Amino acid sequence: MAESKQEAFGWAATDSSGVLAPFHFFRRENEADDVTIKVLYCGVCHSDLHTVKNEWGFTTYPVVPGHEIVGLVTKVGNKVEKFKVGDRVGVGVIVGSCRTCDVCQQDLESYCPKMIFTYNSTDKDGTRTYGGYSDIVVVDQHFVLRIPENLPSDSGAPLLCAGITVYSPMKYYGMIEPGKHLGVAGLGGLGHVAVKFGKAFGLKVTVISSSPKKEDEAIKKLGADAFLVSSDPAQLKAAIGTMDFIIDTIAAVHPLVPLLSLLKMNGKLVTVGLPDKPLELPIFPLVAGRKLIGGSDFGGVKETQEMLDFCGKHGITAEIELIRLDQVNSAMERLAKSDVRYRFVIDVANSLANL
Ligand SMILES: [Zn+2]
Ligand SMILES: [Zn+2]
Image (cartoon, rainbow, N blue to C red):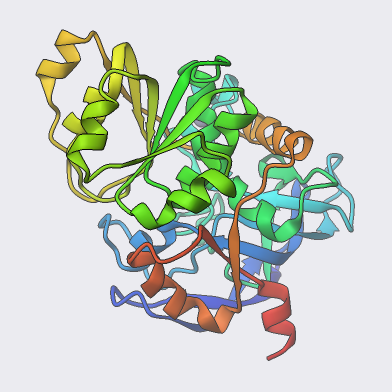
């Protein structure tokens, strides 16, 4: 049987300079369980930046990043029942897993040892996976999400990685009890959505950030109850032992002691940012306060759908800065300096239509 393929076009990085440029490639034909999706919008995640620059050391070039994809279904395979042509759908961090192991059975495909990432991964047919900085994607229906009707396509896109990455640990570690006090460390793509989830769950939310400039917006726009400048010793001291939970979204190397000191006894600190070097683990404050440090990755398909539905119900979206594909390199430079409020989203379909 002759292998048929679908022509695709996107922007790829070809070396660790991380500079992206136009790139023609092929995607597999739409098979029985697949849906082909015309990409409308794709968020620019910090992982995209780490990957194009090979900062985690496992990039295979060329790489087309992008795993916060919202688009329209243009083809469905003959076994596809979940979706029809024209549906508005999302694709997040993974496009495959073994579907049979323990974690897959528990709907935790995000922890499957054989998961297939949306980009920079090897697909089930042996080809490379390429992400959403491109015109189309072809994805097994199991890994495709339904976008609730009232959720906008552009500001909804970042929920597919940033959203689920903070929602999942909040659920798993029980950080959703109304009235409890949540600290959100780092106010970027992940942090700003965590603030919104915290408020939707009925928590008191304090943003912990190194930039005092963000205070006004954190409180007035995102709905945080308080703002703590992490570099101000007096403010830190005043807040010692006041928080039940902290979700730490900081993607750079940073000390944990100040954050742990903010927790009450039995407090939990959950890290979701992925610094490229190890953090120092301070044992004394953990032991003395019976505190816990945990980690968490993005969530499985079922929980991602639950999160999207929750966002639809509560009107939660990301705060975004919309860019064209040809602006992605300067956006990456700004992202590296945390100069974005709070997520770049690429207007993929319109930038390609206007070429
Ligand atoms: Zn991501
Ligand atoms: Zn599995």
